[in-house]
Amino acid sequence: MEYTHLGRSGLSVSRLCLGTMNFGPETSEADSHAIMDRAHEHGLNFFDTANVYGWKQGEGVTEQIIGRWFAQGGNRREKTVIATKLYGSMGDWPNANKLSALNIRRAADASLKRLQTDYIDLYQMHHVDRDTPWDEIWEAFSVLRQQGKVIYFGSSNFAGWHIAQAAEAARTRGFLGLVSEQSIYNLMTRWAELEVLPAAKHYGLGVIPWSPLHGGLLGGVLRKQREGGGSRSSSGRAADALEKHRDTIDAYEKLCAELGEDPANVGLAWLLHQDGVTAPIIGPRTAEQLDSSLRAAELKLDAEVLGKLDELFPAPGPNGSKPAPEAYAW
Image (cartoon, rainbow, N blue to C red; front, side):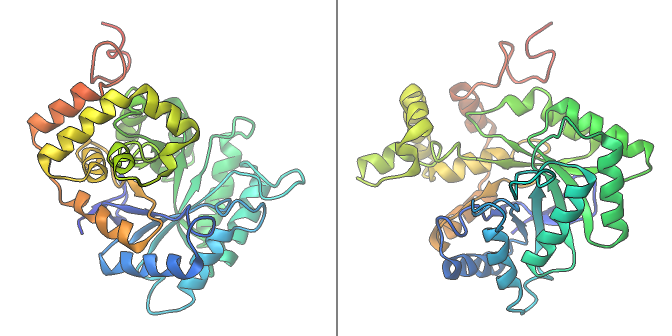
């Protein structure tokens, strides 16, 4: 497993990040623990979660599963860079969500308790809070850092100008500020290239792409259908997107077949070739799915293949692979 620094920080993380959103709703606790053990065996040290994962309001099901895994010892906690998030609602009363200083304090303490640890490596804002001033947010975060409860801070689902706002507000306080942005980014959803990636690069944030396979559509969905296997891409919005982009996805899977590579690994490898990307988040439901994802970390795509992928999945804007405003203006 290769490692890289998370943004401009000195923190070393694996080039693949283990996403835990399936732990609880889709994957049993025993299997979740087995997946995390297998991740360590393969050298993955970067795990991502959130206080709302598990989707039972206020319970933090997924964080609890991780906490009980940490409690087994064996240096599990020490080997793990654990990232969690706050913003979503954890209760019905006011101040149980978003980024007020009060909720930041309560949410951090609750996550620490569920995770059975005394510090969080990377604490991420799950969404931008347009109602809370940055002075309040950074003051609350600085207290957490002074207390030793959080080491680094990150954002998720921020626009480029939100990253700039946050970074400049932190700068005025002499605070390290954000070291990462977790954004949707994949071959089918390249909007981050317009402003999020340039902003992240300018301010020294590592980009952590979520949904790197666009809900499974880049994971060989047509091949699986032909083989009679079901997938989460067969219903709902994913099914609508599949129908709309069927010809493109078919061409993509044929290109992957020519390369002799699994489509999922090609999609992940493409992200690892993009400047500024630290680690795509993989969300295996089984240990076998985790094992199969590791090929992506060693797969090298040459310029010809990267060019063909750009033809199939063009960058946003009429002028191709350029940041804003050149993507849409002279």
